[in-house]
Image 1: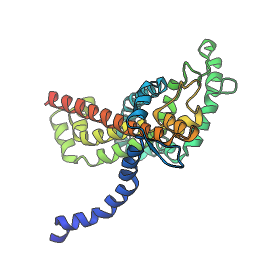
Image 2: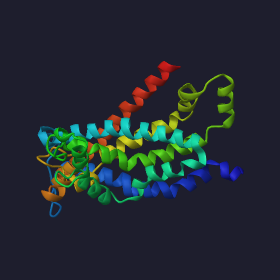
Image 3: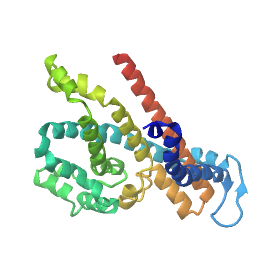
Image 4: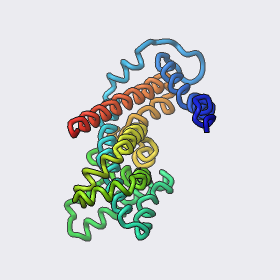
Length: 292
């Protein structure tokens, strides 16, 4: 037991994971930041140009469109995926064994490929044969029919598949957190008269506050690197209306063969992620202090 609890043993156990993380995550991020200061087409010599790539990024209106769309994605994810997953997790926890169907139904999109999810929602939104417009016509709401993946509605039409495809992940995280709450705490809350919504607000949510903070961080970072779903459904179009930072980086790097410029964009994505995560943690810490 002394060996298991010693610092040397813990460090030795963590070293392989840290080495893998450093090689495949940390080093590429640093390398990408380095090439962001060069004009490089992927082959040949790289020419140092200082901050010119970053200056071009901030002058490019497509970047600001992509950043705005990414912020919409972040807000939709944080205020869509997490509350839905938390509500379903609480309902599942109360229902016990009979909730297997709800667990399976919510988690099912996590099993599907993103390509499959994108194609499914493409057919749902199709202006001629899509089930959404057909349903609106059947309900007598023809005036609500739209070309959903158009320039005006495209970014908002991508929000439902985004939420639907990742709710299952946070559902599993919240179920695990709820199961770790000691039963004695629930019994004490009932003795004090805390039931229903009051019990959830006063007991359950504070007990899983750390898990919620982790889920928020995962949600923000995952939303900022969203790529595959948008690329399958719209490829950032029409007219860059659904462009995200990741698709902007991909198109700049692999379509225009500007690897230095693409590296600068990827570094910018990392910095934006850190800023948004820091703001979210600061706001939640202020809220927790005000509640104490």
